[in-house]
Structures are given as structure tokens and as C-alpha cells.
Image (cartoon, rainbow, N blue to C red; front, side, top):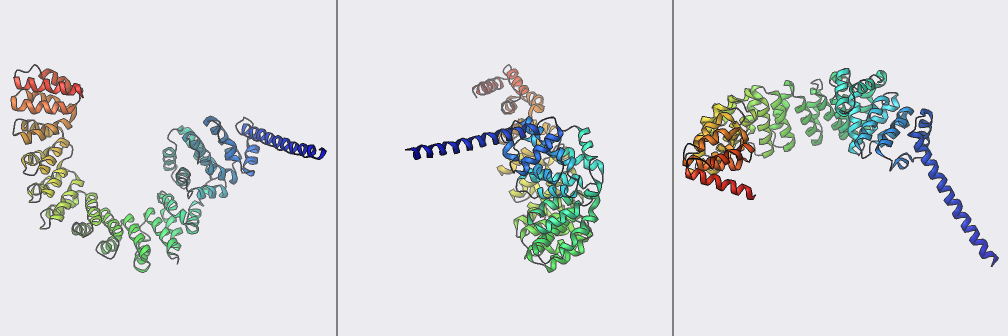
Length: 519
């Protein structure tokens, strides 16, 4: 019996000890958290160091209010060493934006204090968490700037709600000698870890005043035997945008694996220097290249925009691959007005696919200079081409296209007629007289005109209301337009039309108001 009681006693003693230790630990953790949020700088730093050493920093602050977590960031900033940076980077996973912004500000202040601190931010740029990655990439872009105003603009973009004076003060804390190591550290990280390559390209691409320094650091990796390392360096060189490495990129495009070739084509397309035209032309014409690489080549040729590049893109409008066709359209749209004359020829081509894509490319240019080129397309034998021509002409203020589009309201193909009406709606005020005149015409065009005027909103109400007074035919469709308009001005106009001198107009206006009241 005595032994039984002894075992019970030992058990309860152990439980008491465990509970006591747990309570003591809990109280100590609370003390450390309170110290980090307190006003004593030394106590803040000491508490932060202890929690990080115990690997319980995040566990300790879980459940604290946003305001407390924001104050706790100050403890890491005061500490300011590499371990503090590592913990601050991990802290960026916090779910609340005010906390993350305060951490980003702290890292802006201490991120270049030492080379190890900078390395902590570089490591964070490849983190799997998007919040961590975004902030670290942005900070590295800031740290690497030679131009203080460019650095300020980037930091302000990251922290738009932070006082400008606070941001400028944070920039003044940059250690220039440490920041000077940024390119080397980023490039080394890209070689060592595939996860660092895309973020590294984002960082280096923002250092516009240090492009040649970036090129010098990346070129040795282009020659690396590892295709992943080589591809990462090539992609980064594309983001950097200097034409200096183009010969090496062309060589890699021709001599390395299909994977490297694809990345090299994309990089050359991003650089888009005149020296890039020949390899991009070769790529877009090579059916053995995958369609993504050929599409990138098309975009690059659009950026180059020479007459020969334009001619190559026009030829690609009828490519067998849809992605290449669309990329050629985009490339020609990027070229702009210089491509109009070539597209004016293409829009008359025997091949309907070429005519269709040429009309789409002209629509991407969207200046009155395209009107003459598209006039024949509005009469094309293919309804699809006519639709695309109408869409292309429909941009705000293109009054010169109204005379071209208005006849299309009576097109035998309903899709073409609807496209013409939509285009006139987008043109705005210059198209309003033609649309209001159409209200008195045949019911098909009148219906489309009513819908187009309704899309113009309150601006069209006065003209539509005036058309309603001109006769029963106009009144019916004018009322339809006002009913679709739904603006307050349109409702007032409908109420006034219930007193119209024309009985039919009065009736349809009353019916429209009743219908609207039931909805």
C-alpha cells in the first residue's frame, strides 16, 4: 500500500514540475515579447536575440495584434546583424500588409549594413513565399541603383503609404561599398540555385545604369557546361537589355541545346538591337523551332521595326502556327505607323488569313492613318475580314472613319453590321449624327444604331431625344436607345417623351418607363 501511494506521489510531483516549467516558460516568452515591444532598446535587442536563438521568434509573436507586431519589428532593426535580417526576411510571411511594410522599411535601413546582411536579402529573393520574394527583389533593385532618384522611386513603389522623408532617410543609410557587391552576389546565387535565376534576372534588369557591369558578371555563365546555368544567365542578359553580349547569345543559340536556343531567342528578342534582326529572322522562319520561341522572335522584330523586319512580320501573318500569327500581329502593332503601308498591301492579299491578320494589326496601331488601308477590307468578300476591319476602325475620335463604317450597318452579314455599330459607338461624338439618322431607317440598322447610342451613355441623350421628336420611326428606336442607356439623363428624357406630340412615341416611351420600373 505504501509503495502505491509513493508511485502516486512521484507521478503528481512530475506533473507539478512539468506544469511549473511550462508556466515558467510561458511567462518568460511573454516577458521576451513584451521586451521586444517595449521602449528599452537594449532589452528589445536582447529579447529578439534570445528568441531567434531558441528558434521561437515566430511562435512567440503569433496571435499578437498588428500594432504589437509592427513595434516588434523595431527590435530586429535595432539588432541589425545578419541573423536579424534572416529573421526579418522570414517575418515577411506575415499575413498583414502593415507589418510587412514595416519589415520592408527595416530591411531597407539595415539590408546593406554588412555583406552578410545583403546576402540575407539575396537569399530571400528566391523564397517560395510570394510576399518574401517580392519585397526582397524590390529591395535589391533599390540597393543596386546608382541614381538616388531612381532608387527613391522604386522604394516609393514598394512602400507607397510611407512618408517620403522616411524613405529618403532610409536610402541615406545605404552602405555604398556593400551595395557595390550586389551584382556579384546575385549572379553567384543564380549559378548555385535554379530558384534564384528568375528573381536574379528581375533584379539585374532594373539596374539600367549598371548594365555593362551586369553583362561582365553574367557572360562567364553563358559558357558554363550546365544548360540550366547557361540558360539562367542568358535570360538575365535579355532582361538587362545591353547589346554587348549579342554575339555570344547568337553563338549559344546556334551551338547549344534546344532549351538554350529557345531561351537565347527570347533574350535576343528582348534586347531588340538592330544586330538582333538576323538571328530573329532566322528563328521566326525556322519551322523546327517551337512556336513560343518563334513568337518571341516576332515580338523582337516588332521592337526593331526596320523595313526588312516589317516585311518578315507581314510574311508571318499567314504562318501555319496560330501563336506565331498572333505574335506577328502584335509585333506589327508595336511598329506602329511605319508598318501601315506594308499592311495596306497585305490587307489586299489573295490569302484570307493574311488579310484578316493585317486588319487586326492595323487595329493595334489605331491612328487615323489606318483608315485608307482598311477601306478595301470593309468590302472584303470574307465576313471575318470585314468584322476585323470594322473593329480596327472603332477607336475614340476617329471621325474620318464614320463615312466608311456607316454603310456597314446594312451589311448582309449580321456580325459585320454589329461590328460596324460597335465601332461607331466607340468613336463617340463624331459618329452620333450618323447613328441618330439611322434611327429613322430600316429596323435592322435602326436597332443597331439604338444600341450603339446607348453604349455612349449620357453624352448621347440630347441627340437621341431630339431624334425622337423628328418622327414616329425615329421615336420608336430613340426610346429603345434611351431605355437601354439607363443613365439618369436618359430616364428624364423618357419621361419628357411621354408628352410627345406623336402618339406612338408617347406610347413606347410610357411602355419603356413601365418596363424599367418593373426591373
